[in-house]
Length: 254
Ligand SMILES: Nc1nc2c(c(=O)[nH]1)N[C@H]1C(S)=C(S)[C@@H](COP(=O)(O)O)O[C@H]1N2
Ligand SMILES: [Mo]
Picture 1 (cartoon, helix red, strand yellow):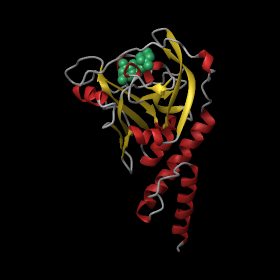
Picture 2: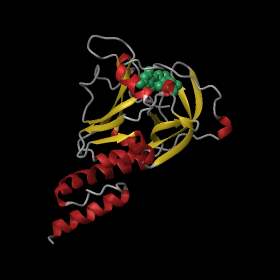
Picture 3: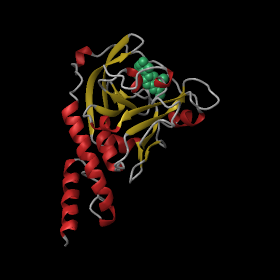
Picture 4: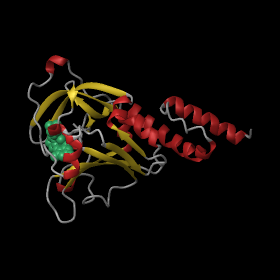
């Protein structure tokens, strides 16, 4: 074995131990170039999230709000969404695509079987209300790692099922973007349960993003597709989200 191939093998082994357990295609030689690129991306992401971000505060069960408000869209009305909801999302799947080496389509059952986290956190809406709920969902980091983002991917776009404002050009569709590195924060999950029950339609069924330490509008409900991109300048009106396009701050930190 040449030195270079040996190096690539070791790198692949290292990357898979770090985050990609379960990705069986990783060590096959035709993916080596991708692995090398992803190894660099992953190192940067891991360092960013280890050095940069703490955890959002978590609360005891006793702090859970008895009546957590639903806000924005509470019942998407497209026929496709209504059909999925009527079938309890059994035919639904989440697409992870864009600048990734291995696009994924994950059913709700597959998401429920993926590495998960449960957290009781406070949701803060800029409109001036807060609520505490218990969220359980698939950790986004391992899912994105499985899709193997291209080294130049910088953001994730969350395409949602709802249109909040009717426009001729489609810029009223709800969407959000986050930095790719924020997918690897341990509290970033695609939540499918709220307070130990399947996520209600009003709160974003079948899955909604929980990106703790950010304001409520960042936490996309009704997520249908996640797209890895290098820039969001040509999505929506170019500012990185439905509410960002209407003046809100892209970072939306708390
Ligand atoms: N798809 C979608 N996601 C969305 C919204 C929306 O209208 N549509 N509203 C946002 C806002 S402003 C808030 S405060 C929260 C509300 O989440 P909740 O309905 O679970 O309270 O969802 C965010 N995500
Ligand atoms: Mo909000």
